[in-house]
Image 1 (tube, rainbow, N blue to C red):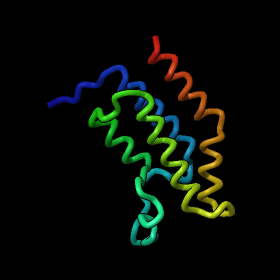
Image 2: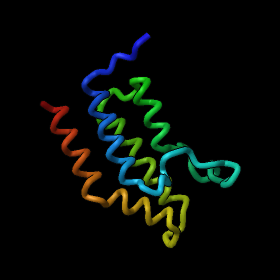
Image 3: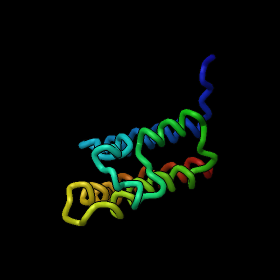
Length: 115
C-alpha cells in the first residue's frame, strides 16, 4: 500500500525538514531518554520532539497548521521549562525559537495554506 501525500502534508514535511536543519546538534531530534533523565516526566507532561512530529505527520495527524505549530512550540517550551538557563539545551531552544528562519518558515507556510 502506497502512502498518498496531500499537498498540505508535503508542505509540512518541508517545514519540518527546515526546522530540523536548524537543530544541527540534534538536541530535539529524538524523545528525551528517560533512563538518562528519570525525573523528566515529573516536570514535563507532554513531551515532544522532531521524530514524534514526523510520525504524526506521516500518519497525517495534523489537521491544520496550528496543531503543527503547537507541537513545535511544545518542543521549545518543554526544553526551556526543564533546563536551567545556563545549559546548552536551554540556549539551543532559545536559538531555535528566535532564529528568523523558523518564524519565516512558518509564516511562508501560513501564506501558502491560506491561498
